[in-house]
Length: 93
Image (cartoon, rainbow, N blue to C red; front, side, top):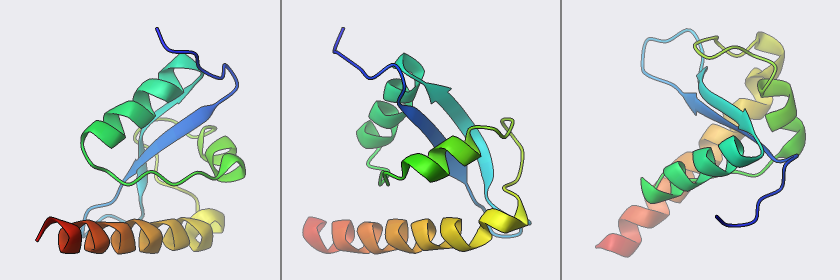
């Protein structure tokens, strides 16, 4: 098993058109956080590192929509993810 930071947190969000906001679909700390990150990377899902945001989002339950006070920062992350996906598509051409 690879070394991992037992204090590392990871949160996976999902947003679909029509949803009121992005929602938490996975959250974990330590080994579970590492698995969330590895699963995202294996699926070519962009990963954004923000320890403070991950800490705040990890307080939410799975299936819970993010609260309005986090909309701004999560929107910035989603723009980052969209940009990364566009870059990936250009590279794959």
